[in-house]
Length: 72
Image (tube, rainbow, N blue to C red; front, top):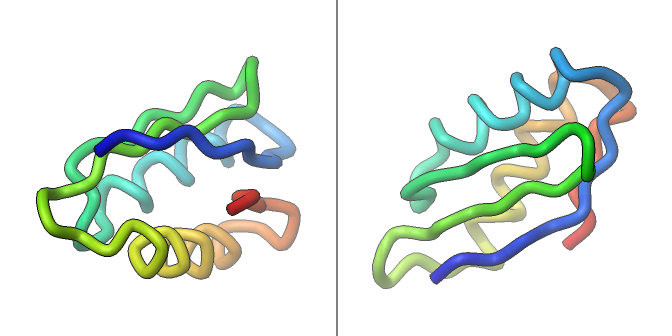
């Protein structure tokens, strides 16, 4: 399953870090962040609870910078 989420990132570096964090999160098969459109596309592992996975991704991304946000 793939889903697209609107994000807030102050700079391209933060967006790249958000992408890395998402890709390192259990339940995420692949994540791509587009800084120009401020969107994150996430493909989830089969059987993963996408809401729980994205809650974890969101919490981890907030540690990068207080301004980093994923709108669920």
